[in-house]
Image (cartoon, rainbow, N blue to C red):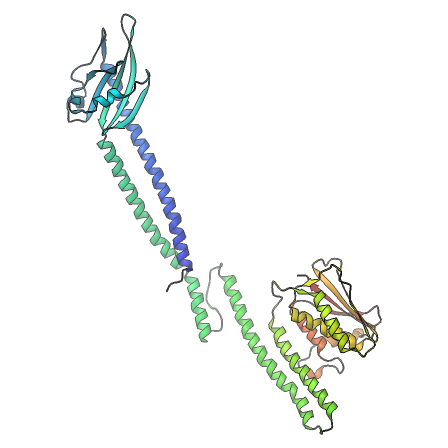
Length: 449
């Protein structure tokens, strides 16, 4: 079943509607213009005939005289369809042409109200078009006499001409509409061909015959095809990273497993240490696979620094309950610190940094949140401790991530390298400075949500 959301169908339906409206309105305009032109021409011809009758008229006393046989032969034949009449002021017919013998509208003509002298009127009645004109004749004795001249002509030729024009007009427009619809169908099919090519290439990619979209595409489709290719490359790279991460994980677990094989039943502390290390390795390798697969921040992500700090503060205070250390969190008040990070990533970053502070701080771990001048779109988070700090020459090495986990410095763990990887996936860097408390300061500049 063909989808009702077909682009080609939408284009054809919308173009058909617009085309029909345009050609329909055009046809109506042409029809009205031709009809007005035809009627106007007919009215002018009849008025000229009225003037010719006036030229042949004479007033003898109180009587209007016109020749019985007029110069235009159509007035003299009942079959000609052209009739002339003259009415006086009392609406009586005082003269009529020989062609009026078969005319049966005398009563209707007499019933029409008189028009003012010098006025003319054109109309259609009883199968005739007519033109009438009122004129005042001045008698020799100075009195005036009103006469109304009528010229009527069979409306059949006029209506026939109009009907012929309409048949030709609407027939021609129908033919043009059909031809344009066929052309639109061909244009839509040709114009949407690149989309069918994309669909076919995607089918081949799904079948494993191709690895990416190939071929030349219109400029309008290049952003789509380029992004699809990047998406395909990212997906393939992600699968490759997962395979590499699993290989690195297996390789990294060899050493702890080898140590565990040599342990005696009473070495519980060493066993626990190796189990914890294995747990760290597993989490790190999986996290590395995820963070490296991400190519940048995702639109629409929103996490609350307020909630994350509150949650982590409570958890860490319980974890380090027996240590005489204080966690100084910022007063939130009505401030709302939202950042454009995934909530799990935010918890992982802050959790590692705060835990690092608890491990190496002597008595105080302080967190502050604010804005820096020139950074209105970012929150600045500083995590300070009063521990031994990190020397300048060791800062880069602490944050460096080796290809092998075994190369990490003793005592530093993998937390800071994991934090760096997560932040790098968002385009954010981790900066280490000297803390006012005497230890290390970890500074984050996080994008606002």
